[in-house]
Amino acid sequence: MTRPPAKGAGRIARLALLTAIALTIFMAEAQLPPLVPIQGVKLGLANIVTVYAVFALGPADAMMILLCRVFLGAVFSGQMMTLFFSLSGGLLAWCAMSLLRFFLTEKQLWLSSPVAAVCHNIGQLLAAAAVMKTWAVFAYLPWLLISGILTGIFTGLCAQFLIERLNHIFRSS
Image (cartoon, rainbow, N blue to C red; front, side, top):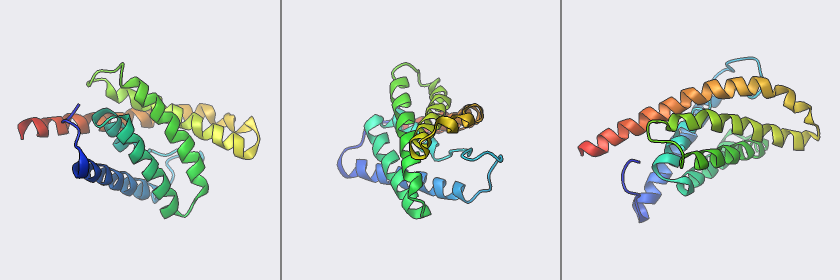
């Protein structure tokens, strides 16, 4: 949707830059106090980069950025257990966005983010149910659905604006 895919060193540099941006956003957001007193609810600002990458670079490159960000985020935060939760949620969200990119136009791509956020929450709850060996964690689902839709709309609109802005920059250069 933006420019032709980079190859070789240019592609690696772009992926590394986007991974660094997503990781920086993730680590900065981890320092913010919780928005609401419900465990697991956060803005998910690093997902702006993932949404951008799925639609601008393609699912394969977005997967590499996601996997690196999730792994490095767990390492740098010192919370390796979050790797399991973030990975399960992230992969389910990535699957949803990868499918939706075939059905959404460039002006509708922001809609993929709330769907992906809900899938991310479901993936995390499935991981929590597996770890805790109980389905009781799904009591959080209504709250996580509401927060996922709201934060997903916000991050989706941010990604939409980013892609439109970058398209404008690339067209004028």
